[in-house]
Length: 358
Image (cartoon, rainbow, N blue to C red; front, side, top):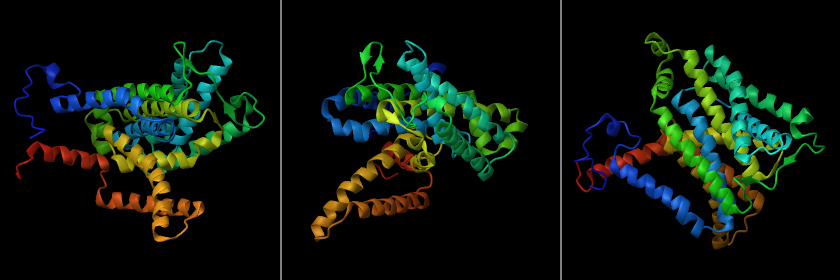
C-alpha cells in the first residue's frame, strides 16, 4: 500500500503533465536529493569520495548521454570515449588559452565542441544503421585518439603528451577537496538528469522513440529522420562532452588520450545495457554496477582466499574480476535483458498491490 495512486486526481493539464505525477515519486526524488546534498557530505570520507562517488556521478552523466542516443533513439554508438575526449581537450584549451575563462563556461564549451564532432560522425546514421553505424562511430574513436596524440596544439605543445589542470575555481570558490569536487559533479548531474527527463518527455523525445521503434513508419507519419537522428547525436554528444571535461578536470586532474580509449566506450555501453536502455534511472543503476562491483571484488576475493587458506595475488584478482564481471553481464542480458531499471519498475508495480496478492 506504500505506492498506491488512489485519490491522486489530476484536475489541470499542468498537474497531469508534471515530471513526477505521482506523489510518492516526488517525495522519493526530494529525499534522494536531500540525502545526496546533505547526508552524504556529512557521512562519507575522502576514500569514498575519490574512489566511488565522484567516478559514479561522472560516469552516470556520460551513460545518461549515451542512453539518449542508444536507448531512446536506437542509434548504436561505440565512439563515446572519443566524444568524452573532445569535451575534455576542448575545455582544457578554452581554459588555458583564454584569459579569465570561467571553469563552468569552459566545461560547457567543451560540450559544445563535442556536439559538433558528434553531429559530424552522426551524419552516416542517415544512410546506415545497426552494426554498420557502430563501425562508423568506432572510426571516431580512432580518429580522435590519433588527433590528440599527433597534433601537439591540442595539448598546448606538451612534450609528454599529457596535460593537467590545477587551481580550479567556480564563482570564486576553490574546487580542491574531494567534497568540493563531489558537490560540483552532483550539481551537474542533478541539472542534466532533470533536463534529460524533461527532454525525453517532449515532442523531440517522442520523435526519437518513434525512430527507434520503426524509422520507416515514423517517416510516414511526418517525423523527419534526419532531424531526429542528428538532434539525438547532438544532445548525447553534448552531455558526454561535459562528462568528459568533468572526468578530466575533477577526477583525473592530469590525463592523456589513453584515458578516453575504446575501453571507456565499451564500459559506458555496458552501463547502458545493464542499467536499462531507454531509462534515465537505468543510467545510474548501470554506473553504480560498473563502479562498485570491481571495488567489491578487489576487497572480497582476497578476504575469501584468506578464509580458505589460499593466497590470492593481485594479478589473479584482476583476472578473476574480469571473468566474474563478464559472466554477470551475460547473466543480466539473459535473465533481464531490459536491465536493472526493469527490476526497479517491477518493484514499484508490486508496491502498488502490497500486501495483497492481486
